[in-house]
Image 1 (cartoon, rainbow over the protein chains, first blue to last red):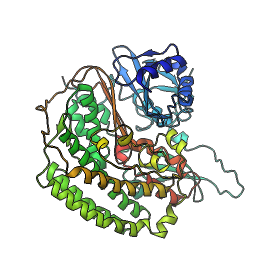
Image 2: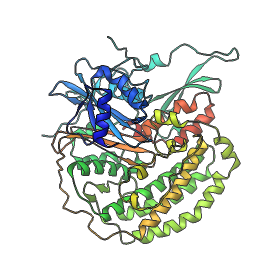
Image 3: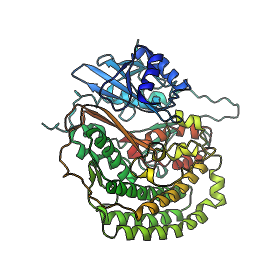
Image 4: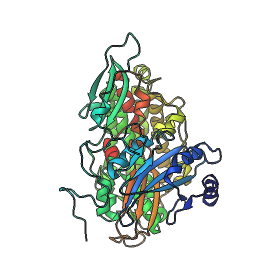
Length: 154
Length: 386
């Protein structure tokens, strides 16, 4: 499905979804509480069939005091792509988990917890993925500091 | 609303779920991080009932180097060097993934010669990656000879790379805007000699492993993964194709010169270890076909259209590109704020997602089959940990 049709089709499912500017793939900003219901419909809708969660990660927008979660969806049978963007508060980053819709989300969300401290509500096994359990802080946040860090240039 | 965060200790000290009166007491065993069949430093915590695997808990991070964080500290040209160290057997494809997203975002132009060279070296690398996998796979199953055969033939491709690129493993060859050097004058001759040599050796590979009844008995029906589950679990590459899904970015979203060459996408039927073995063997033959079609048709042209700038400015926004490496889909997500360094760069690596399938494949099987299953996924641990 072409990008404008795709965005229209998703907005028909989720009327309050808005288009995120500055993205090379069709990207929609959706509220966190609508995520699971929308993802389920995106997966099961015969015209959309987003069956593969290609990747999920976060971006720390320190200046705007929010974390942006990006969900990159791909439809293997139909060959189109869609990105969902969810913004959460930096201090209380709680979002519902997508584990029940896309099982791979279990690991991707654990990585996002490990690196950004995002808390996934109802996640079956939320713990650190790469770092040790007693690690302090979330390294991919922009304000993270420890004794071994590289100096940032300029 | 409170979200509970668990620990590894809590995860592996759960109550026994043995249901049958014949079950013995269950226990946890650490496989790795120094186990030879875990290909590096992967740790699997196994919940066992006798020799039956009840649960696989992968523990990652033993070679986590923070490549994504390091990427935020350097410019785009420097990041190309870092990704070599992820999946070191697909270094060129990794370079290409970063190059592709930067070129697309910064609207840099290339020509057909650059794309032909990129396609050629990536296909050669797919062959050498599968050769190494084939050798190691044999060794994991208890056969030592394939390892020597695989590495012997792989050396020839490494020699070809060394002549042109100067490196054998971490190459930094494909750069935004072009390729680092032009191909060596002997490149075409050497590649043709290799193809002739390798085609004469393929029957040897088949005689040793493919037609071997012990190998077939070890692999058939082991570590099954259905097509629906493979997609749901995020598998890509030969693991997904062995389950019967013909998803190959070289066909579905052609990049480089893949749209101009003729090749097939081999798919399996049941998604067991044998199918994964067979798909990779067939992929080597298809890669030989691609190289044969391109090697006499490398167009003339420059290897950089403009003098490569040290710093590349990428317009603000979210950019994503993906390529098909020897192991699956490698995607690079680039979030730029308009400066010459990425604001955030994330790599979607094929091994990370493929390893996640091990729980589904190995649960209920035996430990010996787990080794075969793990090897049939063809994991490279630095690619998982990044």
